[in-house]
Amino acid sequence: MTEQGEKRADPFLYVVVCAAGVAAGVDELITAARRRGWEVGVFATPTAMNGFFDVDAVRRRTGRPIRSAWRAPGEPRPFPDPDAVVVAPATFNTLNKWAAGIADTLALGTLCEAVGLGVPIAVLPCVGEALAAHPAHRESLDRLAGMGVRFAEPYGNGETLDGPRKFRWERALDLLPFPGAPPANG
Image 1 (cartoon, rainbow, N blue to C red):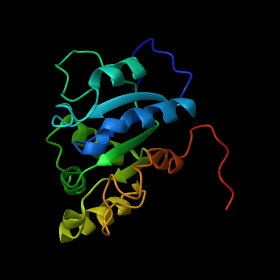
Image 2: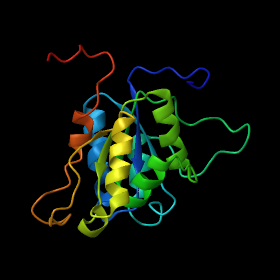
Image 3: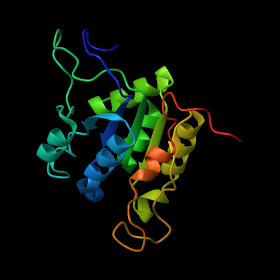
Image 4: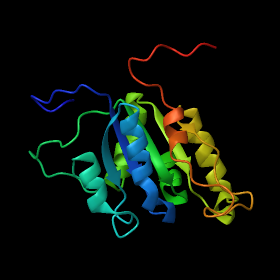
């Protein structure tokens, strides 16, 4: 629910940031989302808050706090309900816990709730080749896809994150329906 008295002109996007080296570039996603008309609120895993991205720059860019811990009872909600969610970069740990329904961090609890509410979710996996080969990873991706989660192609297959393919943040936005947009033909 939207906070009492908060008026929203733009649709609201939750961005969930996990602890991967490419998280330092999350500002690219926020900039692209705002350019496309989204208002943005950021959730981060507790580990991601420890130097994986510029927390102060993201706060300035969004004009909102970054959420990584549950709020106290009676504390107001800093974000309205989401119209969509992007998880980027999505790590092996987060993907597997989320698929299993584990909500031991605010970021995971938010993702589990978003699935339950039917909110559109797009994911940019950031998983190294060895972890991508683990059977639990494929099972988690399949389970999440069965819940309606949309994926950009995962990393792996011998490519490195800083190698031939740049982490293209906007791919996640391309996977989401924009609220109020006419339905795509096809």
